[in-house]
Each structure stands twice: as structure tokens, then as C-alpha cells.
Length: 306
Image (cartoon, rainbow, N blue to C red; front, side, top):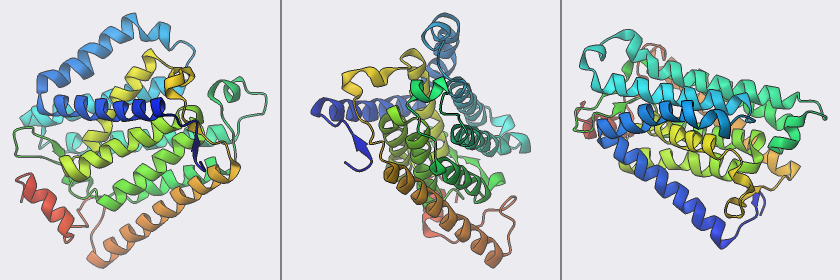
């Protein structure tokens, strides 16, 4: 195959199980406050003391940073969702955009770092990295992703039983551009695990946001990411197991194609963002600029926010 190789019946079934597990844990923790506290607070504390220092001792800084930043995001979102008195606090309203930008910047820095790694770097062999112009292209796509964000002050808590965190101005096309960018990041910076950490992990919150609970993409993304990277800290070299045999194809043209897709998708979304902001004469930093989209109106109605 062009992008991935190593397919087998077992590996595909395992991929489906990973997807199903992410959906299940996300939905359980989304609907139950105490399940969320157990999964994202209690278990990580136990793991940080007794497990991760041993199992992930040789892992790169990126896995550690990504794990704790994802957990910080989920915990912050839970405070925002469940503590009513902070929901009108401007700093708390801005927290989701802050943690999202931090996570994107982490990946952008990593892309630039990988692009400049010397040929004799031990990490190239350990992580199976192939530095190239694709890392630079995707890093630039990540910067455009940040610049195309809008509606920072419009994040709300759904007036539903599950009290989901809703970002109305996070459009479906921004979500797709983010997913493509993140899949590309994993493809070029974590190629040995890119099918699972990239493709499966990214399509899961997209499906949840489009078909299960609309408007809560960032919440879905943070929760599934925290689940995945936390598990990866226990089994950091799961890619060595036969059941996880699907890897990047390591074809230079595949790396380049993936990065061009990422760059193009985010350039288009940035263009849409600029055009919409100018046409509506709204500041995307302080206002929702996509209020006239039917998809955004539907999000508000479904979450009793209209």
C-alpha cells in the first residue's frame, strides 16, 4: 500500500479493537464525572509513581510531555464542565484554546527537531525516523492551524446531562484539517506507530464529533489522546508486537504526499478563516465568526445553547 504496510487480519482486528476501546472509555468518562476522575486523575497518579518511571524510562521527551499535557487538558476541561462558578471566568474560558495551542506547538517543535536531526542520532534508529522536507511542511501546517482558530471566548458548557464542553466555532472543516495535520505529524515523526497513534487515534474523535456528540471535538480529542498516550507509557514499544504490525510504508513520495495534503488542507482552512473574518468584520480572537453556518446552528440547538 502507498501510505502504510504490514497489514494482516490480526493487525486490522487489533486496530478496530483500539478504536472501539477509545470510543468506549471516552463515552463512559464523558457521561460519568466519577469515571472521568478515576481514569484521568487517580490512575495517572498511580501510574506516575509505580509504573511509568520504569516502563517509559527510555522514551523520548515528547511522549512524556504529550501524556501530561493531554491529562492537564482533560482535567482542566472537567473542572470547567463540573465547577459552575468558574464557567464565567474568562481565564477558564480561554483554557481550552490555550491547551490546544500548547499541544500544537509541541508537535510543531518536534517536527522542526526531527527535520534537523543528524544522521548518527540514536533517536533516528530507536523511533524509525526519516527526516526530510515533509517535517518542515507539516510544521508550517501546524502554525497555520493555530492562525485559523476562532471563537476562543465562545466555549460553553452544554445544558445537557453530560455537561459537555462545546466550542461552537470549531467547524467541521477545521476539525478535518487538524486531523490531517496530526495524522501527518505521526506519519513523519512516529512512523513505526503512525497507523495507531496517527490514523486510528485521529479518526476516533472526528467520528465522535460528527456523529455522537457534535461540538465537543476538543473534549473528545483530549480524552482519547490521554487514554492512548497513557497506555503507550505502559507499552512504549507496542509497535514491536506482531499484532501491531502496520507501519508507515517509508516511501519518500508517501511522506511528501502526506505533508503536502496537510499543508494544503490547512492553507485552505486559513484562507476560509481570513475571508470569513474580513467579510463579517469580526475579530476571530474575540468573536465567533461562523455563526451563519447551519452546522454551527445545529450544534447550539443540540446542546440546548440556542
